[in-house]
Image 1 (tube, rainbow, N blue to C red):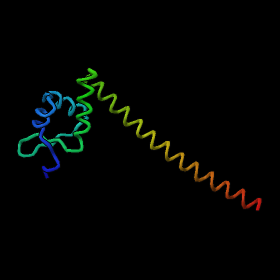
Image 2: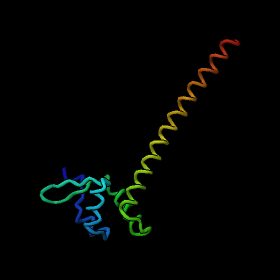
Image 3: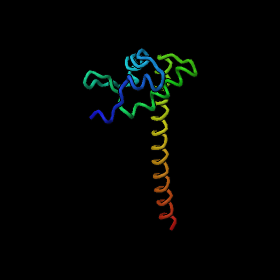
Image 4: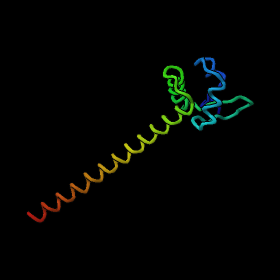
Length: 107
């Protein structure tokens, strides 16, 4: 089971971060930490997010509440993009049916 996880300690040393950074991300709900054999572990799929959060924190000097806001805004943008695509496809479908119906009436 732990082969899909990486230890927080490894992330701290590899990315030159602090345990406080991970604690704050966890408290903000931005990462989900699991404990295996007394070690705090992070799912591999969350590493990309941690790298992004670390860049925002270090390079852009954005604090954890700011990272949380940006994260939620990006999630919202993704959701709205999906909704927009769904509505576009539905519109295209109904437009095609309407055009087919007009062709049948005229034909």
